Length: 217
Image 1 (tube, rainbow, N blue to C red):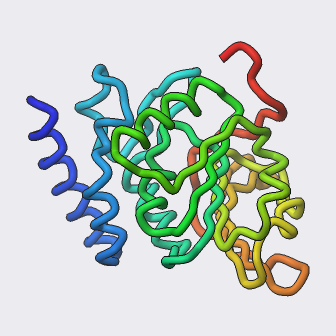
Image 2: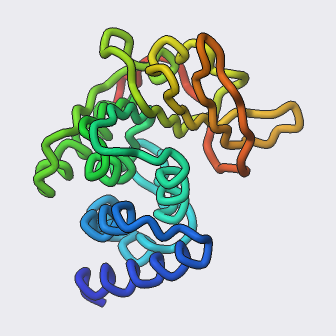
């Protein structure tokens, strides 16, 4: 099957699954349609680009499904003018979709290779409001001012309180947090004053954070 047909059929299936979940935000669906998922996976995995499962990418990492990306972005309710921090660039797909909704996106990853590949994809699509940097995700991006929305795609051992100062007042962070039972749940953290108000959402497949930068890749 050629890539164009894969895209057309893949997005149609994604659209129906999201509608069944109650996700019908026109701006989000348009952003997804304008961001061809097959561009963010290798040719060997192109047929899995729109399947609701993990897809292997470079550096031994994986890309979450387009379904999960859409579900998380819907929960963040990104608005024009928002500044968005994406911790864990991966394939760059999430940052690319978010960039069509937010004013500015900063995406960081510990792997230089993933950053470089994502930058090439953003350039190919003409997305100019994303800054991609190699950085330690556990530290976020101090010095960038307050972000309106933050998402992390690696799991924290506990509440990521180090990010309170990186969020604007009333800002929202989605963070996977490991529980004592070993499950990893996505939590929506809303900044109220100098604390987080936490709402646990659903299980996610994210791995624990590895601190520091990857030196080899």
